[in-house]
Length: 388
Image (cartoon, rainbow, N blue to C red; front, side, top):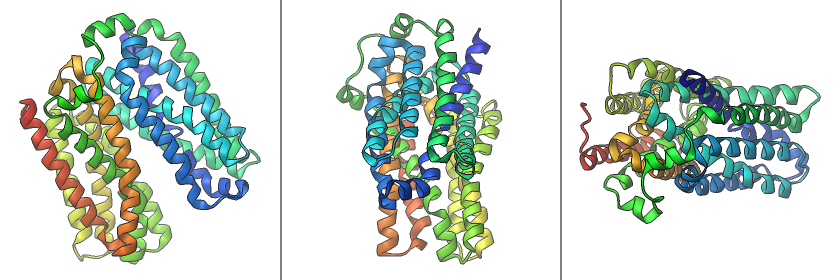
């Protein structure tokens, strides 16, 4: 039963990744058909992100009442409904309307599943699960590309993903007996749901929130601006730059697969520090005036370095703060991550416009230093050892 539930959770993580890159893949066609400026994708993504932050903050209360299984079924069902709504939309206001359940469905299930795995499974499964999320995020654009090159259009791409999500919702509904009962999970968590002010008072929470903020800021900023940096600053031809920018995400996915094996020997804290070291080496390679090839290698190193940081930080949450607080704190961590994703890549766009796109590795280095400092403070405040 445990193995069957774990297999279902793996499938759920693939499903979580499937819709994440759809808007970016389809928008060049969507904005023309809708008759809106290219920049309006930011409106839709902002609504989705806002809903995700809200539902992440509510995850503790929802999970105590419905259980992880119940939250997962409802959230994936909401996402499936929203994707089907996207597939029937012919105006921007309709997309904005469906973006609300899209975002609300994403945040709570992300926090609930991550906490469930952190409490009940080894660290290697957390890394491999996030590897499977990367697989889903990689497959989504291919499905959309197939729909666009065929006769289905972008609406057909969204419809295909929505059907897959509906199927997963049915599988999750049938799997509910395998999950812990909501009452058992509430008893395991203990006490009443923590309010946001109560969570912020827990020693180390503000530090870990900044860790997640900076991590997602690094990942999303590097992913968004790497091709521009390589092309405009290093003189790499645009096609090669674009392919290596996509390999950055491939490096994260492969790295998480490898990280799962390394966590058998290394603790979460050591894995996070190893990730920091690889990111630093990659940034150094981009900063040094050693040619485009070294910068390309540096970008891959940054991807490999990002791989263990996010899943190992999540998995260590119960060890840092206790199982009774982990759901509430993981919800806040997810919210901080999404805020970093929303704010920091556009901020670098302003920096690039005011200074130069060559500032990318410096910008990322500042974020890495803040993240390293906050992680050190987290370990100190929670009484855990980075060498454990």
